[in-house]
Length: 374
Ligand SMILES: [Mg+2]
Image 1 (cartoon, rainbow, N blue to C red):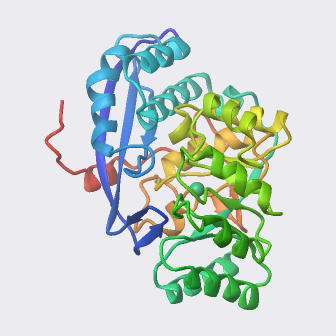
Image 2: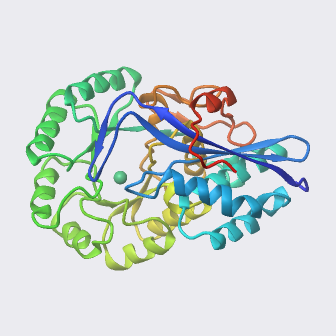
Image 3: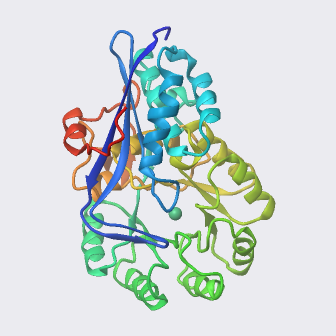
């Protein structure tokens, strides 16, 4: 671990997706853009990380690329692999926000350390407390017939948890889809996520209507800063209310607990900026009797792997994960071998580092010029 880091390479990727998706306050269509980071140590070992921003949620891919390329790169080159904590601290001070860039750096440093030491990333995070993670797949297609086809495929694959994205169209569309799920797919557990899609006026009534379907939970019905309204909605409904956009890191989690805005939280490394901070969010939630699940952004398999290692090492993340894009949303993922997912559960590799590397040919194929090169 005394090796110096001598390589810092970035790919700005545009990854085609198989359909449009509407999520509350935002839409994805055509492709999603992610940044991939490769660190190289003396001796040639590599560590990989992915940043997956969403422009209406965490930030833009352009800002993420600039944070890594301009502000973080000089902090990393020439440092020892064992300086991981100090490098992360320096990165947190060098550029505000840009949590996705910091998540990519954290992932690449952990992958590199794991590769060199022969340990899986989950061992570096405290050790495994579970072997696999139940998978939840989100339904967000504006054409519900296409989501029905996806549901049939999920059923055949053994997936039994879906999350319905609501609040991007009229209320009747949401109610129609919930009725269809209850009637035609009764063996699926259903979760609901508004992605901040409701205006404050009338939000409570709409959420109460949704609660009548008894989903596992209802997530982030209103805008992230509206803590008072989240708390009011939580008090008024009798199904759990989850916070996502309202809680990025441990600082937000502390306030969310103080103000009683949620019964659980979505933990994402793209929000927290590192796996350790994601674990801190979950552990704070658990200490106050709240649940947590492993959420994601529009990610490729590399970021899924990072999240999966964090979750198997974190007992407090007890509501499964949402790492479905690599298999069910991207036209093609970027990993050398498929993101491991079988029988409705994500299986986490036990090999060194993250266990699977990206395919460099695919990175070069999907890389796009943005005029942002070093
Ligand atoms: Mg969400």
